[in-house]
Structures are given as C-alpha cells and as structure tokens.
Amino acid sequence: MLKKLPLAVLALLFATHVCAVEVLLEKAWVRATAPGQETAMVDLQISSAQAARLISVSTPVAASVELHRMSTDNGVMKMREVKQLALPAGQVVDLGEAGLHLMLLGLKAPIQLGMPVPLTLKIQLADKKIISVNTSAEVKPLVEIKADAHQHHH
Ligand SMILES: [Cu+2]
Image 1 (cartoon, rainbow, N blue to C red):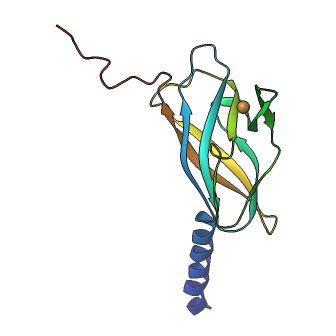
Image 2 (image 1 turned 135 degrees about the vertical axis):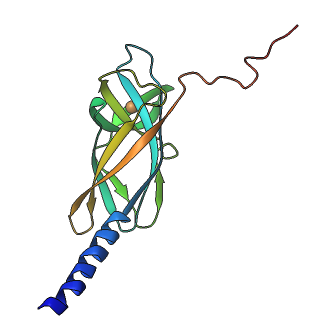
Image 3 (image 1 turned 180 degrees about the horizontal axis):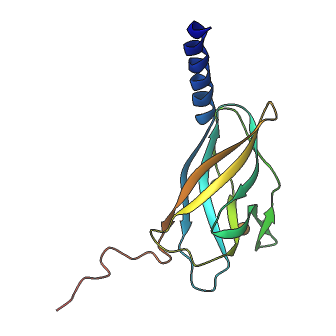
C-alpha cells in the first residue's frame, strides 16, 4: 500500500499542473477613473489550450462585470452585452482587437494608479467543467502625460 502512495501524489500534482496552464490571462489593463465615474473598461488577452467559453467575470472593486461588444450603428457608437464568449483552442483572444471589453459596473471607489484590480474569470471547458482563473489588471493613468510636459523654458 505504501509503495503506491508516491505515484498517487505524482498523479495529483500533474493534474493540478495541467489545470493551472489550461487558460492563460495576459495584459489586463484598465484606465484610472475620475471621482464619481461608475464604470470602467478592461481589456485583456485570453488563451485557452482547449476549446472553452468565458461565462462570467467578477471583481471585488465593482458590483458587477459584463462583457461588452462595441459596434457602430448609423455612426453612433454602441455597446451591447455579450453573454458568452467562445475561446477557440490554442488561440489568443484579444478583447480590445475583437471590439470587446469587460465593463466594470458600479465601481465601489475610483480606480487609482497602483491599486490592485483583481479579476476572476469563470471559464467552461469542453468537458463542461467550470474553472476559475485569476488575474489583476494594470491601472494606466486617466490622462496620458507627455514625456516633455515638465520641461522648463527660460
Ligand atoms: Cu462597455
């Protein structure tokens, strides 16, 4: 019986490892928000080893998170909620490039530089198993400051 234990432990470690690299989240970012602003857009890249679907997103900094698609309707920019997003096997899905973004709704406080913005994505794999994958969005300045903005002129 004892001799079988290390193998079982190895199998368990291997299984955990496979699960950890199943879905990769990269380059998540959000712009800092002005006081009173209640929403913020997050872009990120998602890649899944196997065909999967993004089914929900949550963050502790906002009441809810929706997946939105931008579209132009008679010259007017519109955002519509997308309920589920297909993640093709082995492909990088770049939300920004795809005209999509995550929308943080009901911000609990303004998003500020250096603040952690954790995101939890629930993803359903081909075998129906649902996994949670975490990342943290990098906060970019609300207004881009040009490199020469602080130069003095005499
Ligand atoms: Cu939106």
